[in-house]
Image (cartoon, rainbow, N blue to C red; front, side, top):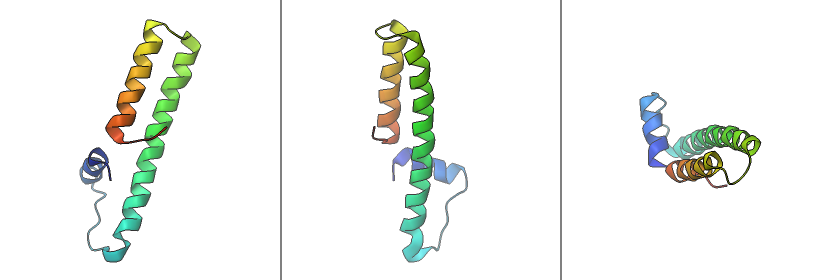
Length: 77
């Protein structure tokens, strides 16, 4: 699991101890849930920048931020 997502798990008190063999199922579900939220946020940014037009300063900055968000959370396109 991405270290940032692991930190969110701790901060939100979603850590569940004692799951044993089923822990990997919990972690996979939690990681997928977080990935879907990140992708939805990226989609919101993308919808906004397509209205502004390509190759504008705002567009290029937003594309850079999307890339940083993907890398930070380990989310693929």
